[in-house]
Length: 111
Length: 117
Image 1 (cartoon, rainbow over the protein chains, first blue to last red):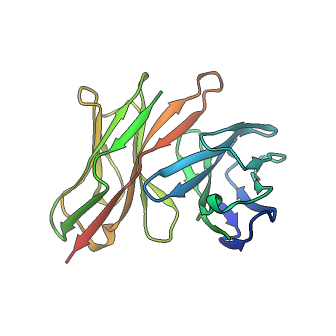
Image 2: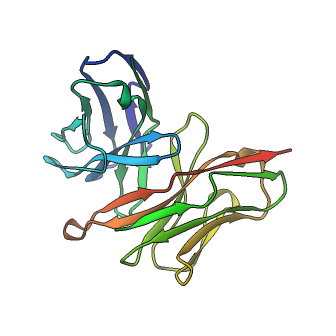
């Protein structure tokens, strides 16, 4: 089954404690993205990657890092989380037909 | 730069009545347009997409949308609402990155659809 998986699905942490949210896709897609969803703001792109070792900033990259060492994986790293990064995060991968496939989301609370 | 505006943050309808969710876009190029649906505590699911073929696009679950270039609109409709349609809907425009021919999605702020019995 074609899918995008994210882990963890729910996470509560404290300010400054580094965390990583993993994302994996099994569709051999080159393009992957991370979004955050906040009430009234829709989804905003954090980072994207066009292929292995090729990443670039989206609209709201501050406080985040990503890496793309393998085609299937695109982890999101928060080196020093802050309360304003409390949000719902989605990973997505894009097929050749421009359709984006979204993961189930990771709900993060930073205290 | 491309942008998308969803004109209603909330829409309420009775079951069995028509649904209209409005979306306007701005684009310097021929855009690709999408509607995604998000049910409570779920990820996003593609409803339908327009990519410069037929202007009337049919999607899943009886939804359809019409691309109107003169009005820069891509409104989502359904003839008869069902209780299971209650969800949040996002209108999305695709922004071409040009050189790498990959597309960034610009999301609207969402419309929450409520369906009453």
